[in-house]
Length: 483
Image (cartoon, rainbow, N blue to C red):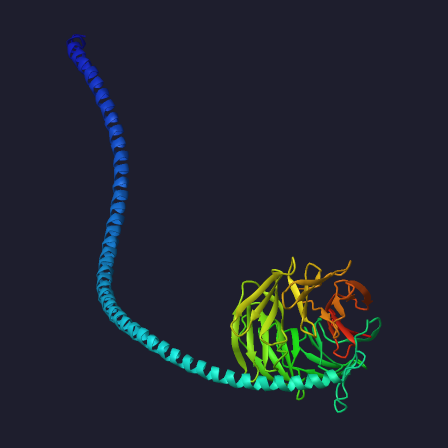
């Protein structure tokens, strides 16, 4: 009992301390738990930091690798820049060399230009001398030609006297040896022959002199010769390039001249059927051609290059060129062979001196383009036709209108529609866009006949020197002969 009572204070002390210690232990245990939690958080942070450190290290390694690559590329670019600088220096040196060579060449060019100018001046002087000599030769030749033509005139005058002595009742006959004659023209009324002559159309027809043979030129580029008594084809001439726009023939019937859309003139030997000359010089299609009434060696041509050229068939080249402001559709020689009449798209009729190339006279013939010019056999009258559908007769001496012909329904078909005068100067024939051929009496100024056989526009008419037949051609290439 006493022991229990004596131990009680100690136990009480221990028990008091134990409580304190237990409290401290609990606190320490709580602190330990907090330390564990802090350690856990720090461990997590450490893991995160380590991961971030590793990623930063990897990124750093990538950046360092990129820096190395950039440094390598920079080194390469520096090397390339050095090479380009070296090449640039070489190019600059080459350019300097080229510039020096260019300066030398320019100096040489200037020197050559001076020499060329001197040579051109010398050449001009030589050409002037040569032209002077040629002019002297031409003058001598002209004197010889004048003597020759004077002789021809005398021969013709003697022939005309014989011809006048043989005139009886309006019928003119040549000698028995020629057995050729022409009579007073008759008013045609009947279609004798209908010929399918050319493919693509026929733009020009004419008769041989003192003959019934008809010559035609077509869009197919051929020249054909016909016997109008039978309508039979007697010959075909080839060699023309392009369409035939106009025809003419020398007075001896030996040479046929064609104006072509290929800017050329073709001259055939009618007997041999071969091209003898090809005349070049026009720069556009040749739409009209005529042979001198005085000499068969000279012809004139008109083209859409706004020039008229005079040609010498014996020499085979152009002897004069006339330039004018408006296109010429038709032309013809006067009887003296020194002047020509030309019809233009501005409707004017012009008279030219072909030797001097000088405009002698000009009249406003039509309100629209002139399409045809035809000289009468006497040479005192010229017939013009225009796109205004009017046909005028002019006095060649004064270019005054001495007759006007028109008809209801008569319409000129194209810029190269050709009308004609009868050999006795009594009738005019003209084709129309309606396919008819209209015949006027010059004395009465009225329509005396309307011929209908064509089915397309009639482009040209031609009258035989014998007074009949009359021939007409259309856009289908059909030729009709009328008696």
